[in-house]
Length: 539
Image (cartoon, rainbow, N blue to C red):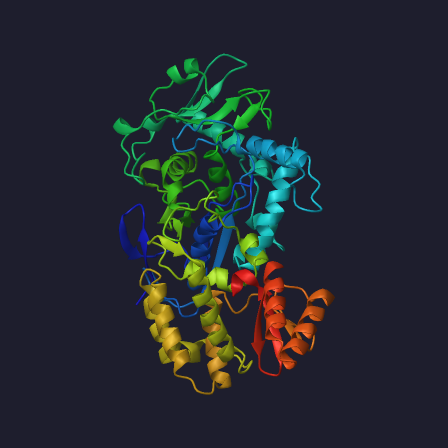
C-alpha cells in the first residue's frame, strides 16, 4: 500500500505523489514570534513533523507514474518565522488591528515595569527586532526539546527556518516580498490605491478565478477587511471587497522598508509566497504546482493559505489556472485542553517550557501531542500525559536492550513493521500504528537486541525515544526526580523523617511529609529505605 493522505484542496484522501519522490519539498507555516508558542501551535507543527518523518522512513511507500518508490528519500522541510506583518485581526483576508510585534512590545513593557520579566531577561520593549530574537530563541529551544526535526536541522542550516524580515527585499538573486508584489503588478494581478503618503497595494482576487477553492469561500460571500488598518477611502478603492493587502505605505509603522509604493510594510500573506519559493523551488517560472506539501493549522486555511495560493500561482506560474501551489495541503485540527479551548483564566493555557518546568518529560509532551489523528480535535489532559509517560517507559525497556542496527530490507520484512506501515500509509492512522507497537511490546518477556533495533527504527518515525531523558539524582536517602533539584534542606528533613519513623513517631513523620508538600514536593517511599522526591503536581 502506498501513502494516502487527506488533501484539504481536494477534500479527499488521495495518494501522495510528489514531483520527485527522492526529494520531497515541504513548507510549514511557522510561529509568529510575539509570544511563546503554546501546545496548540506545537500540535500542528508536530503533526507535520510526523508526516515528514514517515515520508523519510524506509517503511513508507510512495506512488509514482513509474510504480512504487521505497526510498531512500529526503525531505527538504522549511518552516518560516513570522516577525512582521501579522495583525491581531487576521480572520479576514485584508487583516486589521495592530501589528503583533507592537502588541508584544507593549506587553513586555508592562511586564518590565511590573518586574515580572523572567529572571535574567534583558530586552528593549521598543525594539521589535530584539523582541523577535527573544521569542525566536525560546521557540527554537522548545521545538528542539520536543524533537521538531526542522528546528534541529536549522542549527546547521538556518535557511530551513527563514525569517520574514530577511525576505522583504530581493537578495541573492531571489525575489523578496517587494519583488513578488512588483511582479504581481506587472502581470495585472495587483493594483495601487491612494495618494502618495497613504498608498496601499491590493491583490485583485477577480484576476484569479480559483480564489476560494481551498476554503470553499466564494467571492460573493466574502467580506472586506476591518479593524482600521486601512483608511475608509482606500477600502472604497478596492475592485472587490475580498481584495487583500500586499503592501501598506506607513512611514510611522514600528517596522518599515522603502518600496516603489512608499516606505511601509508588507501584508502577512505575501511572506510565505516569497519564502517558500526562495527556499524550495529551483526553477520558479513554469506550469503546475511549485512544491509538494504545504502545512499549517486549520485556522490557516482561510485567509492565509487561500491568499498564498493566489499570490504564488499568479506570480510564479505560467498557467495560474492550473496551479494550486502545493500538490498536498495538510491541515491538522485544533487542540483542546480538558475538552475545552485553552484558557489563561482557567489555567489551561500551556506552553512546552511551562510543562517541562512542571516536571513533564519532553517525550511525554511530544507523544501526547501526536497520538491523536491529525484530522480529529486532540484533547490534551494530565491523565493523557501520564498514560504517554507509561507508554514511553515500556518502549525504553525494549529500546535499551541492545544497540545493533537493523538494515532496511530486514526492517521491511518484519511483521510488526509491515503492520505499523499499513496503518501509517492509511492517512497517518497513528492510533492503529501505536496499537500494533504496544501489542508487540506487551508480548515481549525479555527483549532481545533485534527487538531493540526494531523499536529504535519505529521510533525514528515517532521521535520519542531519541529525546533527552531527564536524569534523576540519587543522594543515598532520596532520589530526586527532574526538575526537582537535590537540596540539603530537603535531605535533612528526610533524614529527620526516617529517624521519626524508626522511633515510631508517625505524627512527626507525617508532619514532615506535609511540610514538604507545602514546599511543592511529593514524596514516595521506594525499596531500599529511600524516598523518591518529585513535584507535588506529578503525584
